[in-house]
Image 1 (cartoon, one colour):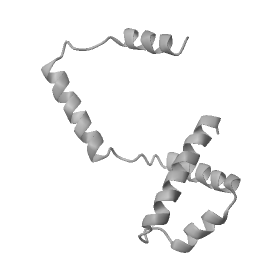
Image 2: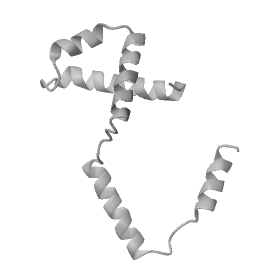
Image 3: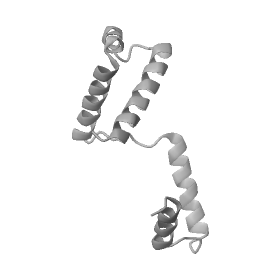
Length: 102
């Protein structure tokens, strides 16, 4: 796994673990979660990677949140109302590459 992917997985796990500790509602077996928390950081990262790979293998992509749906709807309305208010892909790409120094 790429270093960035490890970092993202770790941050996701840390956020999940931190929030799950305070709001545990029985959706996951409490003893299983306690066992996971006892693993070393390296073992937890391996578990996160295995879980993530399992989700990818099953094509398990979460749907958009309500806030994301609302934002997509807002953007569709904005584009419908202002169809000429666009930036060509080449300009967007060039601008992004310039900003990162490539």
